[in-house]
Image (tube, rainbow, N blue to C red; front, side):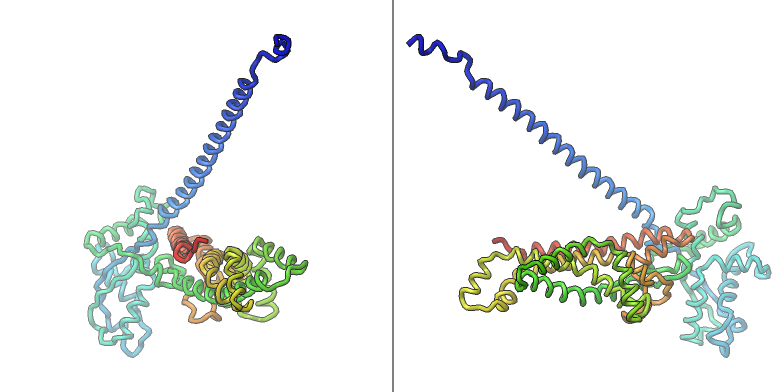
Length: 434
């Protein structure tokens, strides 16, 4: 008995195994903690960059959501605006004379002074007065009250964007012009209401008159055309590939190329549209119809991929149950599978349209960055879009367009956030658990 136990190992193995487990567990815990720290750091950095982006846009763009206006009593002199000459007339002279009558040191006989007075108001003031007189000629010889925007330099002065301490030779406004504006402020003739013209006005060469109406209408027509083309074609292609197409090398080839098309840079689609839609088919440049077809080419792969994923998410038991009660393949797909997959399809479609709304490069290549002073009444008229309008304003040398560029970006982000919120709502509202 003593000989049988003499050759055994006196050290227990359980202790060494426990030590190895403890060491391994500690090492794994360190790796997990490191991974968590890196993840939290990455998320914090991403949120920091997002905060900086939004804060910079808001800090530079919020000024564009208000506009400096002046309220003025204007006497419509019959000698300057004769009835027989309407709609022509010296409307600018009438406004300048009214300004000189309320401002000190404004000599109405000094031509340079009158030119400086004319630059106080926006260029659209005379046309606003002209429209009122043409609509009601009885106003000739009377005094009317009109509220119009001031020009961009005075708007920036009122918003604090022009430093009064800057030497006069380096300022956009001279000392006597600032004194005139201070007189109008003291007279309570200056106000700063909400700038509704940012949405309701079309584009203009003058920052104080420029708005997004033309770009909003152009984006609406382009997205409408994009949706009308990409939605039925994308869903139809996805249904065929997922439910009816035979699984062979050709269908695999098509599927691979659809996935590749979703990753093609947008500028390539713009070049394709320029060569085919405009070069071969002779469609008009700068038209939302062409822009919509271009965006549809980009959106269709996204819709196809999203639709196929939604169809795959429907349990096979739904198809088997429908086939078991005698339904045809067509009835199974369109009567059971497609309605259940529709929430995912709509979510993918909205996300694809939101991506199309923010695309700039393809629209630039087909000419949707032209200077258009009126909103289009149809998809075949020349127009701009929100991203191209932002590009135009960002490239403008006028300082007043800087704040409007940031404001337009905020408007575009608002539309994108709204569309993504709608997609999330549809997904949560109609999503089913299996």
